Length: 172
Image (cartoon, rainbow, N blue to C red; front, top):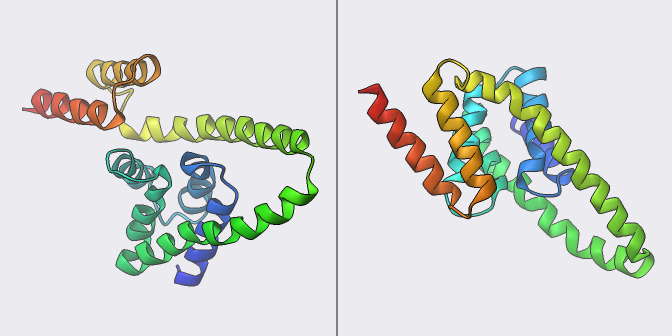
């Protein structure tokens, strides 16, 4: 895959997302399903790295770029990640003067709802590839992690670290 195509596809995914995770369905569709240059396992690893490190969740695209094209791919993906930040300020000035705030709010709400549905649709094949449904322990870890993140304020990094430790102990 050429670096220019990688940049353009990553730019598309970051431009069309409202937050870091909402680009995941586009990234999976382009790189795992359509072009076969990335596996669900690699995408899972990239998301895990982003979840367990400081910074924005959208940073997983840098790891995706690395899996696809090495260091150059990581740099190109990072550039695609930061490009929208340079475009949004003039766009917001333009839209802020012309848009009815209630129409903009309804539009953004609709995008968030659609993005959430796409994330759920994308998460299923990734969960299947991760081995969650290949035994009682992985399913229990997944259920406990989901409950902890949903019902408590336990930091995501601690949930991931605890799951890794439990998996390591069980594998010994």
